[in-house]
Image (cartoon, rainbow, N blue to C red; front, top):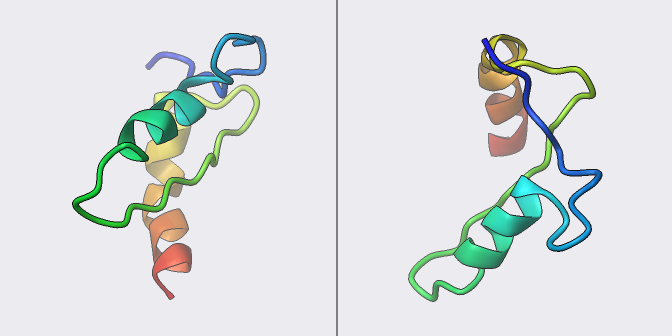
Length: 60
């Protein structure tokens, strides 16, 4: 599994989460919440391990 990046060095648009927010924020259809839950050194595998717990916390 590959490493994920939170975009610390993306001086142009602030990383992939901010780039996603900029695109989704243009939409008028529905409200969407975006959370940057990146962890330094995180991988796709570690994200999948945390995903359900992280989603449940935010649905409360």
